[in-house]
Amino acid sequence: MSFPWIRTIAALEMVGGVSGILFVLYVVLVAGFSMPILVVGTVCIAISVLSLLAGSWLWQGLVRGRTTSLIVQFIQLPKLVSVPLVFTFSFGFDLFPHLTILPENVNWGIQLRFLSDSQLYINTPNAPLLLGVSIPAIIAIAKLWDYDPTLPTADIASEPPGPEIYFGTEDSSS
Image (cartoon, rainbow, N blue to C red; front, side):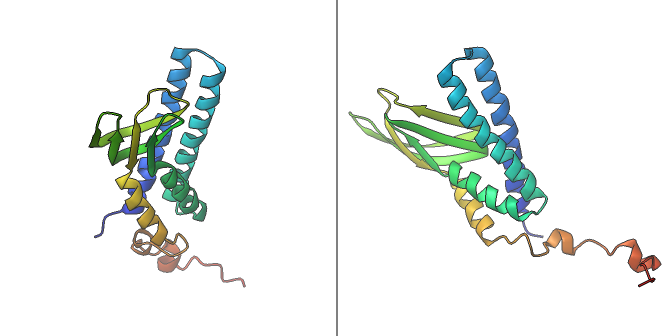
């Protein structure tokens, strides 16, 4: 039996979407209502809702699930921290190597994130330059790229026939 990649991707997107929504709501409640927080919070909640919907649709085997999951994974793929823009999103589980460039030296490292993490900042003074790429997003994109939701999967193909086959309850009036 092969590993259930599509179901795992769907579950991680749903978990990341729910925890992302809850986290942004918590931040807005704790930090108070201000225009910058509401604007960035709305964008982060929209991306988390997209992740939740993508995971749900992918779990159901819908074509739009594959499409939205690819969008979510491409959002999760880049990790960028710089003065003009900080953009990192993680859904469910993320592991990414990164290179950090500071004025005095260059470092590299690996970060591990669970549940959800969203960082979206504009004009962050004194931010280092960090470039990274999500390993789970690369794997998910590769698996989703080859996935065709219109074809029967092993889960569907292994189900036993319905009762109409055994009991002959098909409509014979036609």
